[in-house]
Structure formats: C-alpha cells, structure tokens
Image (cartoon, rainbow, N blue to C red; front, side, top):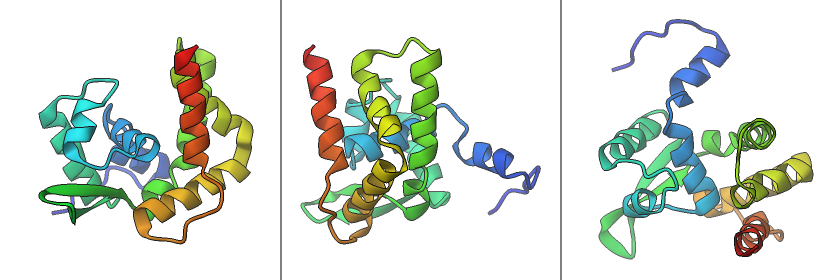
Length: 161
C-alpha cells in the first residue's frame, strides 16, 4: 500500500526515501564494500547496525526500488542484494556527501580516501564507477577500468599508514 506523499518537492521525496540514518549506509556498504548478503552487511558495518534495523532497511530499499533481491546460486538459503539503476545513479550524490564530510567533519584519513579520490576524479571517474557497478549488479558488460580496485587499493594503503 502506498502512503500519501506530503509534498511533491523532489528534495522532500528523496529525503523520505533515503533520509533515515541507515538507508544510505546500507547502500554505501553494498556499493563500496560489495557486501551483498545480509550477514556480511550486519557483521562488517563500521557503524554496527542492529540486525532488526538492517532487516527493516533492506526491505524498505527493496520496496523503494533501490535494491533487488535474488537467491544466491552458491547457497540456497542466502539472498543476494543488488543495486538497481536508481541506486547506481546515487553515486554523484554520495560523492558530494563524502566531499562535504571530508571538509566539515572529523572524518578519518583511511575512511576519507575513497571520497577524496572520487571527488578529485570528477564525473569521468564517477561514470567509470557507475559502469562497473552496472556490470556487478545489473549484468552489463565489464568495463576496462576498475574504479573499485583503485578505491580499494588506496584504502588499504591509507589503512597501513
């Protein structure tokens, strides 16, 4: 059942879809950490999301059309969560949020390095990242450039520093 909307304002509607504390964290973990299973999302969240909240947000994000679910072919009792195209289109928004957070919050270097690289890489890098996400989550052709590898390598270097 669809609930009535309070306002047709696109900012309001975006906030109603994504504005709680956990929805973007779940999307971030799937997008940047390639965490695709419930248990992986639960056990590897930097923010230690509670199991009931994670289950609720996953259901909400699937209903909102930002995630899709499918059975895991390697394990019949597991579900795989995938980003949909609308979620992949959040990359520029998440880049801008990361850039703002780097400037105005006490973010750590190791957790900021990916945001820094994406900000510095600009729309060309965002497009390459989105193409790679489409390959991983939507079955599109694999791009030549692996932005995920670049971001992961930079994170590991920052972590070791």
